[in-house]
Length: 302
Image 1 (cartoon, rainbow, N blue to C red):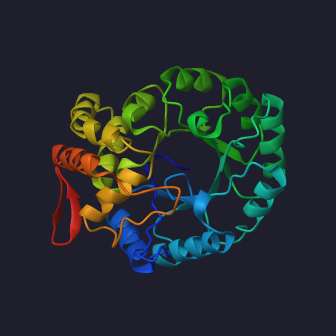
Image 2 (cartoon, rainbow, N blue to C red):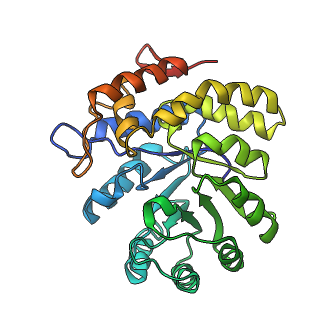
């Protein structure tokens, strides 16, 4: 169902710190025009942790309104309370979203059995397709391959976004799950290798500002044009890395503002603006990847 370049969309805000409607519309059109396979909204990159419940609903409504069915929308619905995650997930039933991305419960540090029961309970209380999200650096808990195997047997758990950056994981998981179970990289720097080893695509931060190139990269891999994919990935590598020179989404928002994809790079505390010294570093990474503006549209060429 989901493969190729899927963007982990930023949540644009105006200078008052409010959700910026016009920037959202611009971003959606940019990704539709670039051929992005799907949009993940309200994920880590989307600053879901600092949005109110009302804002999360508003953001999803905006995305669905502006996308007009032209691109699938995946919404982040995870929580560290199982009951809360179920409630959030159910609130998107019949909304038009294509699937939910559910992060491992953070801070609690549950056991593997606790993780299994958490995701099973969510899946049993919704008809929406569920994509697991494993990002131990952020959550403090690691969803192990054997638990992924158990969860993959639940009908509406259709895949996983694996963001450890550990390429051994893709090999381990692929051996344990059915062929149609979707494996998505959550790490741009290793996404090419991830796909070579059997992954279906990437949920990409880089795609926020280099959407066309990420689409092309995934397409080249899918068509077996590995050498061309490696050359393109090499051109993007500095950008992949420098977009994490400070905690995500600080650098990516600054970069999107430089390319006029959004009106402001405003973030909410405790996230702060990109430091001056790192602005020049990210700017150089944009140049290395040939990211620039052409008639108001961000264009990345190889």
